[in-house]
Amino acid sequence: MGDHRQGSTVVKLVFLLTLLSLVLVLVATGVPSWSEKDGRKYGLWTFCITDYTRYQEFNVLPELCGKVQHQGECAGLHNSAGAFSILGIIFIGLTMFVAALLARQRKMKGAKLTCTAWALCILSMFAFLFSLLCWVFWLAYAESICDGRPKLRSYGASFVLQVIASGMMLFNSLIACTSAYMLATNPLHIHMNRHGQHEGERQSNYAASPARQEYSTRDSRAERVQSAPNGPSSRPSSPQSAGTRRDSTGRSQQYQVPTQPTYAPVGYKSAYAAPMSAAPMTNYAPAVTTPTYSASIGAGQPMQTYWQQ
Image (tube, rainbow, N blue to C red):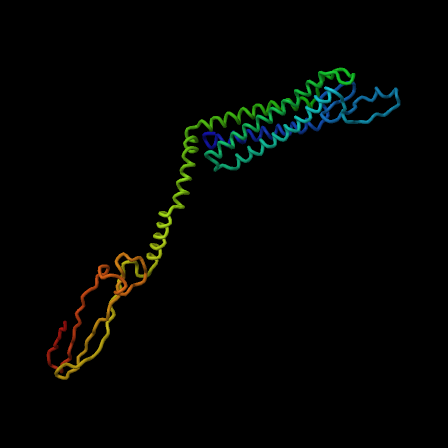
């Protein structure tokens, strides 16, 4: 499973083999054709009569099928075969579910992928074990003399299907366990398993640290400054007021006197200007403005400019 395509192919193969094994085990469990003796077919739960000539002399029509009942050792062997058949079906279904999960979760990696692969290996091994024990106990039951009847020693289609299903699960478990071992010993996945957890811890610790919160506050301030219309370093122009006055000769004069300008502090990340008295003078760079006065003299006379400190 080192490569993504190879891993996907292996998982699909395991899934198909498991599905086929499940079908075979279900058929073998339900059909009473494990062994046949004296005109009867025996299954895990019931037996069915196939030859009615043995009952003609008694003028009795026997039941077509009935429940298998034994006592002593034969009952234990027969019941054990049925119990292991049910356990095999359960674990084969779990193996198929995990294989389908691996096939769908293509982005799974790291320790999660390794653990899921080993889970698939373990489940497939148990499925093979229970499928094997099912027909092994039936083999012991068929070779035993139960309640005076001779040994069965004949095996039908259901027994053959169970043996084939257990062989497929053996092959399936070998593929799953080999793939899990190759994945666990892959240097790339070992590096991801060792460093992925530490990287996640570092990211979570950094997100909860005061430094990260401070950086987040600064980033939000910077975004507000960038979205401001004037930008962070713009300075407002100094508004001026106009008026008229008379000089010592009685002539009217027009002048403009600048009002107190407002300045934005140097490095202050806000879109709003602060008055000059809002911060120390060391943080401002006011410009020295000298008002000018222009006197309008009569026509034909030169313009006079008065400077006032």
